[in-house]
Amino acid sequence: MILFLYGTLLDPGVLARMAGEQTLARRMRPARLAGWRRVFLRGTPYPTLLRDPASAVEGAVLRAGEAARARLAAYEGSAYALVPVTVATARGAVRARAWIAAPWRADPARPWPVAERCPPLGWRHAARLTPGCARPRPR
Image (cartoon, rainbow, N blue to C red; front, top):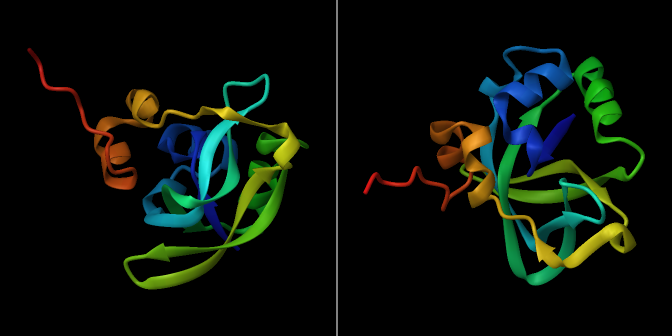
């Protein structure tokens, strides 16, 4: 199954621990989901997606086996469902699935700030997958 990742699972360490596969992050490829925006899941530090025709979400796609997908589903929890999406990649459009919460669970007034979350993702990795995430220059 091809998954579109847009939040904490972009962190290679988190992905490896939660999926139980140390090399899974190497298969991630940058992807963009048009027509959605990333916001906080109400009452949590985690993101979800809301439909928004004027926005797009940068993230990554990867092919995950059944065991990894099951472990990731357990990590995502019952607040999220796997939703079919079509993302743009360097190789063209790709049909994938993304864990997205029901719209009533989202906090539309609170964008989930990827740029502020870049350090936990690892600078080089985050910059490759999420444009706009760059290591601050020393002053």
